[in-house]
Image (tube, rainbow, N blue to C red; front, side):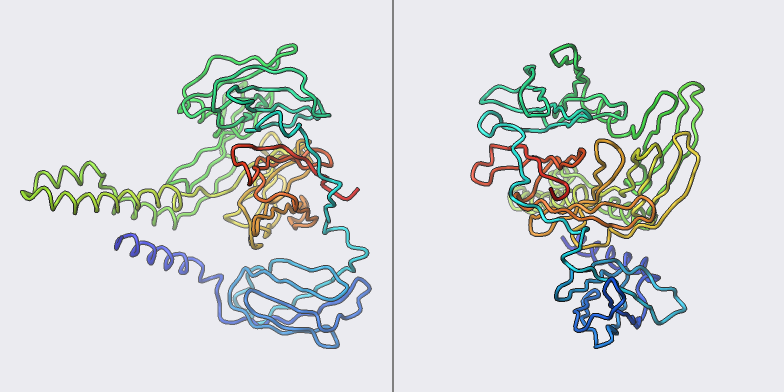
Length: 444
């Protein structure tokens, strides 16, 4: 545990050192808050990071802050709350100017209020325990569910009525879609490819999990002419996208993102804690005559090693998040490590890039959700169990429209089609039952 504590200290120190360019001496932030007509808003509360202020009669405020990026929140009577992210100030400047325009609650369109009438059951409550599902472009749904002790893949129409079903093995983990659009039924030990044949769902022979999961995880995009493969290296702190032309099998590097400092820190940590539990016990048997007392000591040491390894695997070994999505006939890579999104053609030609900062809002879940039509994408946030989705502007990267899933906490398997959000909810009174709902993405 001493080594774990020591590593945490070094890890935090290293991260602070890496961000010295972000954390400067206190920067003076001068701002002005106005309404949509340009009139100043008096007595509005302003919060930047942990610092607070109020606007004067001219709508002006001044705050000092030294930590960036920082979230700014402005609140005023008769106005909707304003939130944004202030990015890093230029090093040679000690003053930052901020201009905030607030909209009245009666005209605000960005903040969406979900009424009780906008929540719908997608499938009758008492008929199935929903494990996972996939919404199709036409509104039909492939449902993985159980009825009692039996498990099924069910095909629902857009109204939620059962069209047909196929029996499956017990206890599947999820439904996964590969980059070619095919659905796969995932178990702990194997993966089955599925296909709709007539009025039934066909299931092919299984592949071992360790072989098939790589195909699902690594393929990011595919069409008739090319395929994009994702590869992680260096403790998942190096991410590379390769575009392969199917006809010629020629490959080229499309994009690379890397966190070198964290990769070095993880390597050092791994070397320090590489001794296994079996090695510890062998050492105990070989070097100590008093087995009873020393076995207790080394078993304790083994438990500490195991705890440390779990901390490494579950907490520290978190891959950098730079997903690729097909949106509006282009390929978008959202590189959160470098605060930018890069746009390519489907043949791999770089078109443009734009900054992104929504990931610095509180509650960011490191998850982006595109709609089924591949025209929009939403960032997921969560606070106190309440999930909210912010639509990302694909021109400037700003987080704009916001919708909350207020009726259910901790929704899972969120998908978006047309004007609806679909999700699975676990009944808090009966954790063995999961239900599928949908609600309007905008007001009706």
